[in-house]
Image (cartoon, rainbow, N blue to C red; front, side):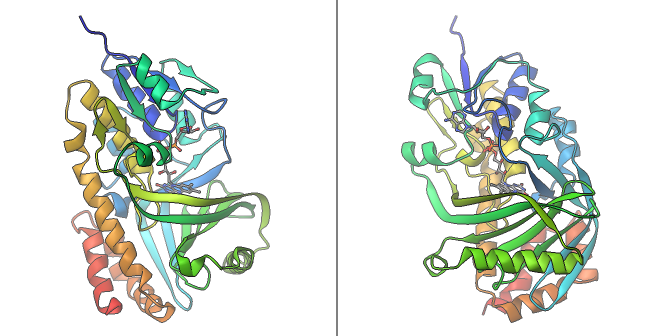
Length: 363
Ligand SMILES: Cc1cc2nc3c(=O)[nH]c(=O)nc-3n(C[C@H](O)[C@H](O)[C@H](O)COP(=O)(O)OP(=O)(O)OC[C@H]3O[C@@H](n4cnc5c(N)ncnc54)[C@H](O)[C@@H]3O)c2cc1C
């Protein structure tokens, strides 16, 4: 009888979701993690915005009911403020969740690790090629596209520069904010995500296009920091900061090649529009496990994620064409009934509606 031996490379969102699902179906993988423990990196607040995951409205309820993966957020988001240079839209409702990543005890990866029983080998120096020799199947879940680019026809659509900080102040943990302002983040965005009443992340992210290469990042950062302090009417204090360059957004051509599965960012889970990837990362981990357990075909299961990726890329390309005055018009339109309907309705295909709103502005 042939014995299936599965190695998961990376104990992050997709790798651990894959492991939990395999275990539920009676298979124990071996997980190889490069760091000395799960989530051993900077702490940051992230977001699951329900608008972007339709037709699923509540992603955390979906994960628990459909797949037995239990994650608790930092808070549900009741209010989202979208800022353009001159306008703002205030959206209310059940908009999604904030959650923590990294070293924090309640980070999503640590929550997932507590649900995993399989062996995790830390400080792993194993290469993909080595794992392939010792295991029948390898799940690539390393959180970056390096192997996907090396092994297959990976389509890199853009790279992004991110600069962020943890700030302390007094915050409403149920309220997040985003800035769509080319002066603060050209063709990108800034955001504010609280992860307690006292701590939040502020981040700017912009594409590393030729025209952005010569930007003075320190100046952009100063402006953004000043703006967030002003909007919150507080002198925020920076307690930690991070900077990431060359963050790849793209998608692999083949989610599975032979007995290798590409999950999470190795698959292409980061949606180009706002850089969100958690939802798709967890799903790809689950889907790879389904294939390994004979419950579905990974290639087929990931088709909707591929479509979402392409829609999100078109949306980004349209947004990139907007000047600040046009962004002001868009944000003004989103303030009030339209914005609330868009973010809260379970029936709309919201991204289609946003594309329709954008069309006249991009001509
Ligand atoms: C600053 C920032 C903010 C973000 N904000 C959001 C947000 O608000 N909402 C959202 O939905 N998404 C957000 N994302 C994207 C989201 O975090 C990722 O899409 C998601 O974590 C990808 O999951 P993954 O499983 O692919 O990788 P990860 O969860 O990053 O896990 C990868 C794991 O692999 C390990 N590893 C790496 N190399 C090796 C190796 N050679 N051998 C073994 N192990 C290895 C790593 O140490 C890590 O533990 C953000 C990303 C960044 C960088």
